[in-house]
Length: 334
Image 1 (cartoon, rainbow, N blue to C red):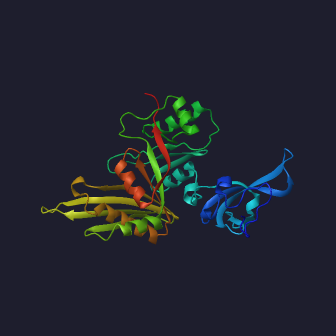
Image 2: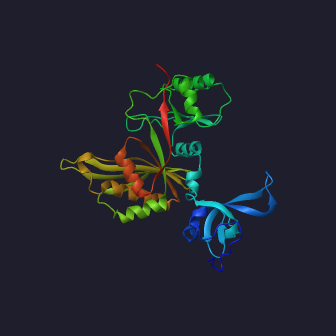
Image 3: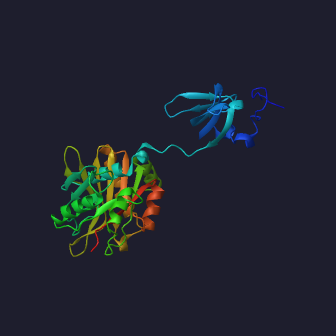
């Protein structure tokens, strides 16, 4: 028997028969895609005309109501539904940014670096920090197009870094056309680097703050946060847990850095000395940085982490970070 508020038309499935189209009251509140008949219209083959509706199901009875991303609401009578299914939630705006744009924003979080554009690519070089050259600030971000032949593009990159006494390196998104361009010229991952594939992870700052609060992150003795750079666009922070040994020597037990430009902030160099781990120092450093970044207007957090660093990946996942994409570094043939 057909319920009075769910009329059954001849030749259409009963509205409560989920086997027919897989939809029902259970989809309310979820994102769905629905194929429906367009009454009074003829399709290209002479049969019925169909259209798809994508959005959040707000109501099932007496008709399905779907709210699209632009806010419009579409009412779909049950007897016009041809097929449908739940679909994953729409990615947040921070995840909809493309890989090249995300990496370009990360490049702007380092002060005192030389940058030069090769059309859509960004060549970058910086001085050593902590006794080492950073790959991310001493490599070309090869993402996008250049109006050069592949051979000329590779040669330009090699010459640019050679002129600055740097080993040429290309940061490329794994699986991209740019990776293929460099590999076709014999470029490869440097063998003297312990791990080269790096995941860019993104998270909502508010979500990370809540996760840290649930973990009981709190101010830690001897923890300081200092600004190491500030201009009209960029603020750079350094946080550390530093203690004085009996002989008067200052020892850093945990440290982390961050920078914010607009609403986008990057975290880097989060580390705790092995002998002092599992005491909350690393969490305290991260929480202190996040609090400062929030006060400076950041809403999105980003960081790079080696894909082989399973403990760090698990930690960041538990705080709400998700991998946006993976990059690798390629050097020219010897």
